[in-house]
Length: 295
Image (cartoon, rainbow, N blue to C red; front, side):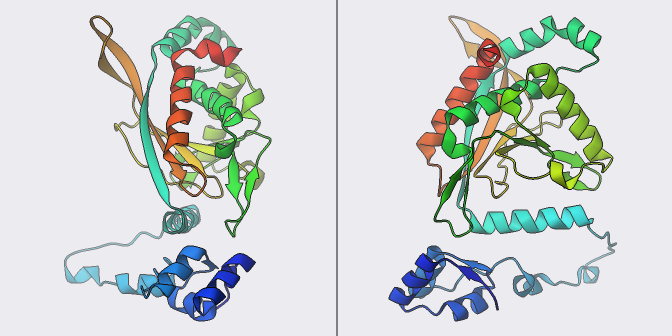
């Protein structure tokens, strides 16, 4: 079968005495990395990619156990499943969890409610999250990057485009908010609303779906206290948001504070745990004092 292996991987395989043609055939992988060579050289069975050779082991006649029905997956759902399966198999992912104090954001949203109504815009908390993420992507350049397919080169981006994951009846779509770092809160809110509505109506063009610096997966309206979002390649990180809840915080006395859980999954080949901790610490600082976002 055909496969991709960088010159450095080919040289490494030759040193280890590993036949890449045979390794690709056995593993079913379309891209081979040093880790695959190490596993083969160590005598371990290479992990099969989630392709047809792997899926045949999952073939079960479920009707033997009871009544069933069938529902074909949409084209969007099939594409998403293939992409995320490959990402989960190929990327060493870690998720870092933190929280953000939403008191100042909620107070500012309340103070701007009349102006938002006059503008015909719903100023959501998500707009503040987008603004904070855009600032952090400018300050932490390794998060605003992509690895080359062979994993040898880190491509640093001089733009900030943020993907917004949208749950639609047709499957998960991720339209992209371009140049988010250059937009104000009103424009961010208006564009998020427009992208979400058109995604639901399947009116998002291909040119609006790619090239994100990083994606936000927002489950705040649905619930949950934490989750582990899967990195959307070729991005190197994704931010998950879940429902804001009141939590008791000790400040000389117990104070009820609206707290938003943050879940940052990242590609450990590019980002380490200390990077992730600093990134979310800065992010939380910006959310706690949104005036910083307006400077």
